[in-house]
Image (cartoon, rainbow, N blue to C red; front, side, top):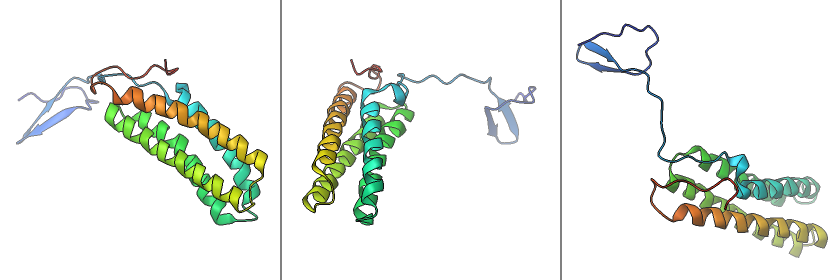
Length: 161
């Protein structure tokens, strides 16, 4: 067995008493995932998250629990897309975007509940509902593009086209 000559060899295999080194290989992924900042679904969820944050700050004085749940769901919606883009696997990415859809549903529920209880004004409700609809549209478009095909196929384009 050959021993490692390079002092900074990162990839090695230990067998019995000998150590073999392998040249440092560049990782290649089966398909490239766009940076999450380039995805329309992330952009829409990010705008929704910022709008919900503004609402949650106002709502916190009147109902801290509802405010906290609303904020947590909004934060989860955009962060799941960011997390999913870090996986280099279609199925894992699709699972994360599916969780984004769940978070968007939660936001809708909390928003409707706050409006029904008189804690959220009609204009704020309409603004966030509109942003939520946009985020839902682009997230559904993304999850549908991830659901089709095999894991070896290229991922979605950055602009969702």
